View (cartoon, rainbow, N blue to C red):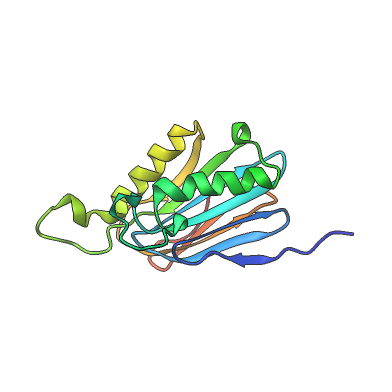
Length: 165
């Protein structure tokens, strides 16, 4: 008997791990980046909705690991390994990282979306996890769904339509 899939929502500054046949979904990616990790052998998948590039700027008392690229990706890997994934088999896809507003200053601190995407790539390379596909940049919002059975990342945008990565 086939198990029916569950749709698991991943909120802002949140991360979730699931296995086939479940689907992970995150809505409202603007400057945030949705990073997915997938082990094609164990069919364990994970998704993080990352808001900021580095926990160095954290001011909160209890650090939310899912909020920052430098803490969310290691935590996602840890949780996936505890569910049977192997770091050596992990593949990544990501979407988001838009520059939602135009600023006349050109200040690097205002480039949150591009900095989020760059920080995620840095963390992935630190763990030698290949980035298989991405839909980042631009100035539009995205909603993503990740199928833990296939590793397909579906990206929807009001302005740009739908695509599969």
